[in-house]
Amino acid sequence: MARPKQSARNTRNKKANILLICDGQTEQNYAKYVLNECLASPDKPIKIHTQIFNCIDKVHTYIERDPKTFDAVIFLKDLENEQLSDKEIDNITTLQSEVQKICGQKKRRASDSKAAWAVFFNYPSIEYWYILHFTERGKTYPNATDVVKHLKAVFPNFDKPMPTNKKEAEIFCTNLKIAIANAKKLSITTKLPYANRIRSHVPLTNPMTEMPNLINMIKKTKPTT
Image (cartoon, rainbow, N blue to C red; front, side, top):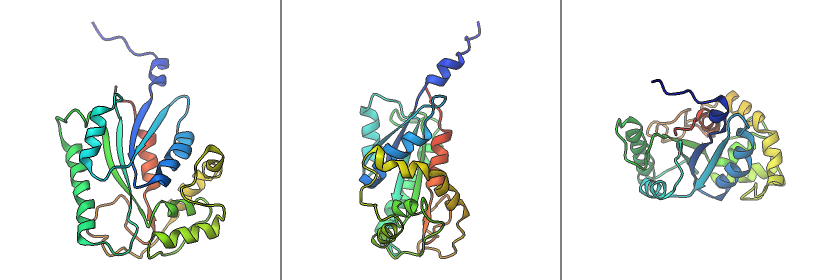
């Protein structure tokens, strides 16, 4: 006998759980107060859970201990500096290789489940993505400190690790579509020195952001159970 089809209501009520591995509190707050609020809808509920881990083994341990089933595991990394050491580059490429290996496995370990895994970057940091909420482009930056200075020039109210509540997040939610549009219009040719050594979804230029790619992945994520 054929299995009865799920009702549209049951399908609609399933929530996609996404684990976002961040570098710091600012990224966690943006996910909590902006992405969770702006990307979820009654027809497609999502919940982004954030953690800060410095290696993939800790991610596996966390997933194995958490009772939830994660439908996507996403790493969001800030490249921070124009010059990275060989060790820093190796750490990034090792992470990418491990993620690629997980995605290619036909039989996954329990902690991997059926989740989609991916790595996304900002250069210098997520604060450049913030800038695109208020202006079209920005400029080149030697490091993450410089981009924060520019952000404060275009958005004087900024203070790390904003947004820390729903009120502070309102302007980012309002301008989210503007930021995505500005990011898609970018045509920057100044490549980072290590651009050919690190795989990416968009060219590694100074500056750059893969936040629209990350957001698109979240939107496409469906519950796996």
